[in-house]
Image (cartoon, helix red, strand yellow):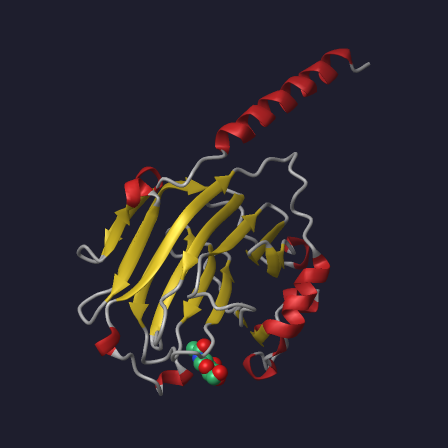
Length: 268
Ligand SMILES: *[C@@H]1O[C@H](CO)[C@@H](O)[C@H](O)[C@H]1NC(C)=O
């Protein structure tokens, strides 16, 4: 019957649990990231506990993870550029390489002092994006650090903020929608100037007298996804609360963009 296969299965469970424990690793930025551009405008400080990226008139800056990930949960605490950040964009995303790349994006579009940031999200699978959803936040993201997470499993992608899910992109391959699951991705972040388009379509220009603009990162965490993980069930009530009250743009309601009909995932 199942004597040998059961014990084999039990052995597998134990191995997976060990692997899971081993896969939880901490937030030392020296160990996990490389500053990749910006001529010194990106810095790892406090013994590797804090990373900062800056933008001035000459350049922005960016970093990337040393490792590539295939599924898992990624957490990062960010404190966004305070004050008049209009025209600046801070991006934080997973991406694979090449023309048919996959990508899971958070972008934070700055604003005038006291005006709200826009949280822009997108998902690319096999080179195809055009799946933007944008949100406001229920707090000031420049006053303190907050946790921005990406849960990526073969079934779903969940964006969350302080553990509140804001967006879910489900695997709908059965409806012919490509889903990112065959290419490992690196984690990237960067800050740059986008005042040709970011703030009210380019009407508001970056105020360079406020430069350098600096965003800060701490407490990076990665937990590998395992087939036994059941934590991909998300709090649907919270997700609906965010989508109802804080979503300011949804490609799935932008009929002008899709005159021939919405993409299949919008009709799911
Ligand atoms: C900046 O704030 C204004 C006023 O609330 C808002 O209409 C605009 O969308 C915001 N811009 C960005 C880039 O978030």
